[in-house]
Amino acid sequence: MKAVVLREVGRPTAVEELALRPLRGHEVRVRLHASGVCHSDLSLRDGAIPTLLPSTLGHEGAGIVADSDPASEWREVLAKVRASVGAAYGAVAGKAVA
Image (cartoon, rainbow, N blue to C red; front, side):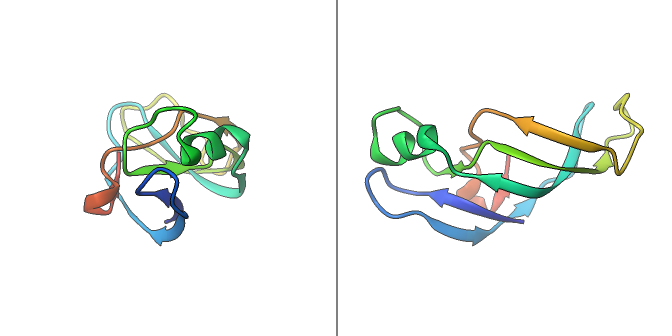
């Protein structure tokens, strides 16, 4: 998976290839068709909003459900979804997104 990664506040971000960990406990995986970096993400980058580092930016998107954990009640793979989630952070250094 590619993601915009912030490693240091006030420094440029970079698009990096990250490995995804296996799904667990009621999670679904969404294959994003569109995502964006908004003003909130830029505020994280610039230090106006505190964040743990490293951090992935871009928390709004639209796509389809690509997979679901067996424990998940979500069974409709390929369903169209839109998402707005909090910033994912903390495990980028090991190349696995939490």
